[in-house]
Length: 377
Length: 258
Ligand SMILES: Nc1ncnc2c1ncn2[C@@H]1O[C@H](COP(=O)(O)OP(=O)(O)OP(=O)(O)O)[C@@H](O)[C@H]1O
Ligand SMILES: [Mg+2]
Image 1 (cartoon, each protein chain N blue to C red):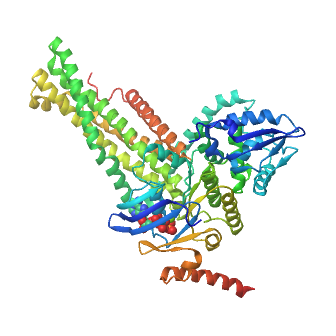
Image 2 (image 1 turned 180 degrees about the vertical axis):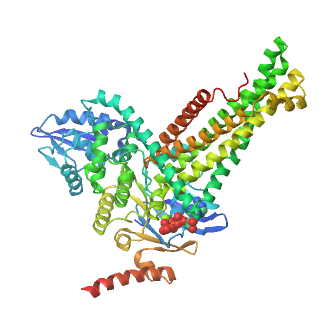
Image 3 (image 1 turned 90 degrees about the vertical axis):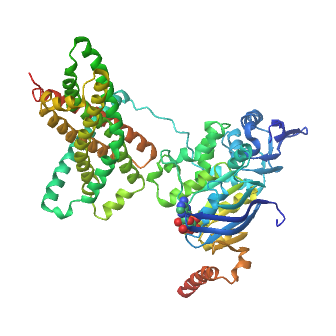
């Protein structure tokens, strides 16, 4: 509303021969000054260079903190020699004068910053690795504890986790699995048709889906879906001090929060792998029927002959290991979250990225270690 | 002073959360330049009422007008100017947990985009000084503050723009008596200088007595009485009787000790 005002509305310079009076008028408030703030500050600073000028603040209608801060800056952080002001403004000025001298924070650069920048990621990696190893150790201890005190096993939490990470993921894994099955079958059958090797579609789909794609797809989906939610849940519990509340009630985090998550996902994951593989195979079967005219009956009957059962165990084994690894990573990063929102977002991202990477690494390790399992030579 | 225009007018307000009715036929007006204190039992809907005045919640019925226009469909320009003239202290502080104390207070100032960093620094330091936060705490994160410090930093943030309209939800809860006293002094000083309007929720009788021009009592889902301390003191309502009985008890307690 003061847009049309010019800066000269806020002060007058009166020269009566002997003294120069600078009379400030109007509202010296942030709301009134608005975009004229800098300009007024600049013009007043110019007048302030004249040390003999008399500053008259008694005509100011209203002044807020921004106003007095402006003048304080104009005066070069000291009271001018000649100054007239009302008692209430005197009080505001006193407050500023009493402030200890602090400069705006400048980021001081550590002279060893280069070493720091190189070393920090390694230390972080080491901290994460040792944290996770400790968590595995704790899990082992908790398992022993529960073996000796079976009554204390948190069945409720395990079943809740099973439901949340397993049952509720059935829809998305089925959709993705089916589509991948269809696509894979369609592309392979086109190639196979060229060689007249139509019937090998069963081998290709069977081996690739049961051994590789099913477990990997399910694991990646679960890492994104359940891993992120576990991390975020633990992070929010830190932010809202719920973790502290559990501690003072004598309920260990590892037994009530982490153990059920890892066991729950360790159980849910192989089941999800089975489900995803089955749906993907159905997708592949449907596409094979349409593309090659291969009957469902033939497909189902040839499958056990062409795919050794070892592949299924391998897929399920991957599921167990990946599920536990995902939950472990999610819990580790969840507990590392600091009580602020930024750390929460960062922790969740790191958790998901790490989980997906680890899942792929686990898959590679399985491929190497079990290279002679389930392959007909 | 009594003929100042109304800034906030609430008429026939209804608030319901599911089956739970919080306000029914509630009427309340706030004049420009006054300090209105809302008192009422825990869960009587004081915070909810403040949120409705701020436009954060829409009531089930009735109108909330601010500066003469409805809170819920006023034009964006007016809404923006109202928001930049309003300071709010939330009951739980609502500090940005990812920002330091300094940056929390500096945020509304930076958002104006008319101040340079040096001025912002000076302003932030003055505001922190006003609420008795020492400069060495300026770089702490909100999670590392004490409960009373969170209150004071949020107050500093609410005051950052020297707003004309202040909403304070229990400003002195969690402060020691000396700090409450200096809060009262701070508000009185600011008020002398600026044309402040304050809507405040408090259970602290000393703050209430020292600051309020008018008191509105929330009970039975509506404002049962509104007026100066003297006017409502003897109003025959069980909540008001109890409320002031505790005050008498307190003074008696001190009297007995001496
Ligand atoms: N979003 C919501 N959903 C459901 N109920 C709510 C919601 N917000 C508030 N309530 C209910 O409305 C009632 C009033 O809450 P409000 O926070 O306004 O109380 P208050 O008067 O501020 O109490 P206190 O003095 O304890 O802060 C409470 O019973 C509360 O449970
Ligand atoms: Mg409240």
